[in-house]
Amino acid sequence: KILVTGALGQIGTELVIYLRKLYGETNVLATDIRSAGMNKGTESGPFEILDVTDGEKMFQIAKQNKVDAIIHLAAMLSAIAEQKPLLAWHLNMNGLINALETTKELGIQLFAPSSIAAFGSTTPKEKTPQNTIQRPETMYGINKVAGELLCDYYHAKYGVDTRGVRFPGIISFMTPPGGGTTDYAVEIYYAAIERGRYESVIEKGTYMDMMYMPDALHSIIQLMEANPEKLNHRNAYNITAMSHDPEEIATEIRKHIPTFVLDYKVEPTRQVIADSWPNSIDDSTAREEWGFCAKYNLETMTLDMLNKIGQ
Ligand code: VAH
Image (cartoon, rainbow, N blue to C red; front, top):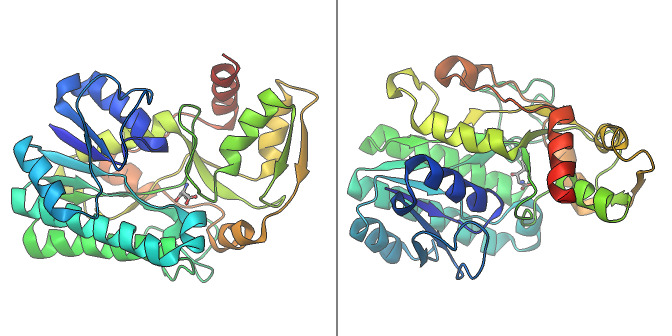
C-alpha cells in the first residue's frame, strides 16, 4: 500500500491515477492538505487530509493503513519559495523530516524527489554530472540539497530505503504546476490553444531540462522497484528527457499552429532562478544503475500536449 503526499499537485494528481492502475485502487492512499473535491483522479479511491508538517498525523495515517511506501510530493516550488522562504523551509524541511521519521519507525520505503534546482551558478552548466558542486542560491534549491543529504543520512544511519530523482521541469496537461520556474513550459501550450500567442516570463535562449509527465511517472515506479544492490547513489539521481529554450518550444508548436506568436515579458525573479540552473544535465548514472530512459522528446510531447489540451 502506497501513501502519496501532495496528491492534488501537478505530479501527485497523475501519479495517483497511474499507481491505482498499476497496484489497484485501494492500495493507493492519496493525501493532501486540502480536500480532494472533484479533483480529477482522486474522486475514486482512498483519500485523507494530511498536512505533512504534522508528523504525528502522518505517522498515524501510515501506521493505521499499513503503508509499505511513502511517495512524498508535498512541497512548495521554487518561484513561490522565493516569495515565502521561511514558509518554504517549514513545509519543505519539516514535511521531509516527518516522512523520514515515519518511514524509519515503520521500516518502509521512501521516495522523496529532488530537482535540477539542487544545482547553482557554480555548478557546471553543460551535461551537469551526477556528482558535482551543489551551491544553489534559492531557498527551494537549499531545501532540495538538504533533502538529498537527509535522505542519504537516514539510509546510512538507520537503513531506511530512501530513493529520489532530481526532476527537471515537468510538462503535463492534467493539473497546472504550482509556482515553479519551469511552469512557463506548461503555460505556453495552453496559451497556444486558447489564444494563439504567449508572453514568456523566461528569456529567449534560457535552456532548462524538461520531461513529459508519463516519463516522470514511470521513473518513480522504475526507481522504487529497482534492485537496491545496484543503487550506489539513491538521493538523488539526475534524470532528463530534453533541454530547450522558449524559442525551440514555440517552433515545435508552430508545426501544428503556424500562426502561433511568442512574445517575451521576462519576470526578473524567475529569470534569476532559471539562469542559476543547469542548461542540460547528464543522466548516465540513472541509466546505468536502474535503466532510466525517457521516451518522449519535444516533438512527441508537443503533439500529445496540443492534442490533449485541444480536447
Ligand atoms: C520548479 N517545477 O520549477 C519545479 C522543478 C526543476 C523545476 O523543481 O520549481
